[in-house]
Figure 1: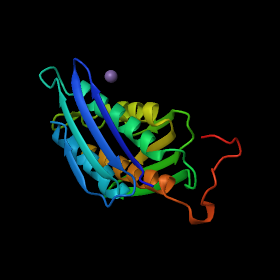
Figure 2: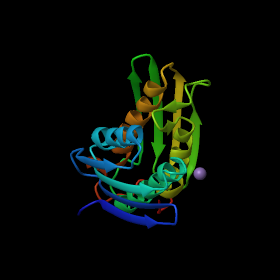
Figure 3: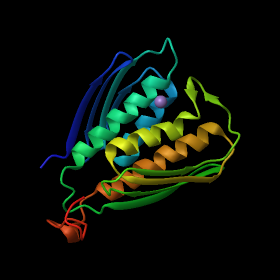
Length: 197
Ligand SMILES: [Mn+2]
């Protein structure tokens, strides 16, 4: 059974297409018009072993905000769609990833309830190319709202803004992979005593 999601989302501000295959090999085809964001979504596919297509055309003449946010919303919706009934998966995942001087700790529960806890160092550089570093939290909020999962992302230390953001996406990718992967001991079993996720 294929675990794929496909979401098209069009507004007056953006037009987004996301396709995801949870059981892929990390093959990505990403184009949002925001170079550093493309780099981050590429990390998500590669380290999550998700095949991922993202095509966003947004109102970049205003700024990158709508483009980045709406892509994250569509990505969350596609991920939720791909998870299907969540039978036989691990449900929980966590991963700690260093990037030189920076460290990201990510824990996820595919709970069906959106909740984000996010901390990162204060005072990092405001921009990485055209990417506004305050958008990282907004991306995570948007993704969580649509993917309906609990996500805790912490960067206890780090200095370089590029490193601080990139280690979060790498750790997120790996935590999502672990949580969504089939658990061979739990085939046919829903990982919840409640009977629904
Ligand atoms: Mn916004």
